[in-house]
Image (tube, rainbow, N blue to C red; front, side, top):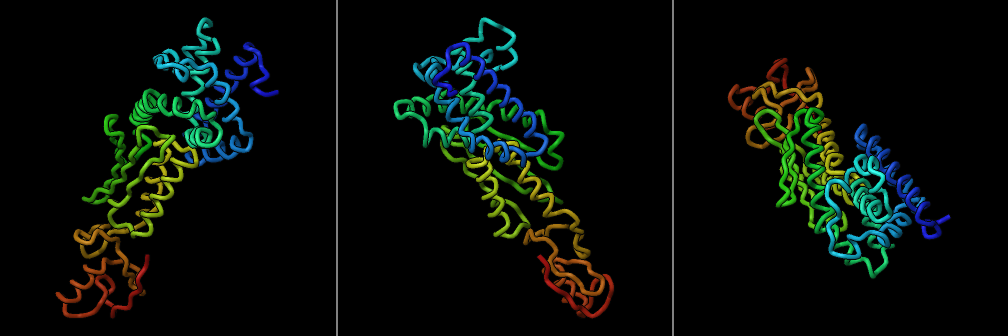
Length: 301
């Protein structure tokens, strides 16, 4: 039985079931940011998102007029379900559209590009720009503010006006930064990710990080918090177990911003290239700083 075949009572039942499913996704995903793509993959196969949204836009007043999406009471699932008078198709449709865009953004984009009826395409984009995208970003920022205890060395800031979210990670006296820029119609339009201010990380590696985050946001249904946790996870792994250079006592070189990459084959300590070169010049001999054996080193990544 399809949504199109349902009467009002059955439609309300199916919409409420869908809202419950979205709640399940939202509950499970924060425990492991890698789990959301699994939900997205499953729902892609079922084509459930297209079915739900195609019905919801028929009943939703915000798509079919310039009305507001309804304010906090319509976007608060628990608050709506506690009030039987609010459980009607039009209000539930508004909630379903908003919550689906919030929870499964990449699938909503795919629906809009491939399945959304042409007569509704521009209306949906306008609704996203006017109401859905700003509200989602506002709620995302609040969730990240409430989750700061999980961020460790990472600090997150953002602007609702510029639609930019910045995460910084401090290592020694240096700050590594990732910037995510969201277009007004996100998730219908792609987010931009800039990891170029990631000091000490090779070019090919931070470019791969940028691609991973971009794919997570634009194709795998990840939230901003998921994307930032992925970046933090990559940075944590980059510096995990890295000991400070025995010459300058820092993980990152003060000028080159690189990690220690020359390893002594005798004592296996690692040094910054510039630090070791300076040590050889000042000491007048080519011996390891620590074990004092003739230098035989290898370059490591």
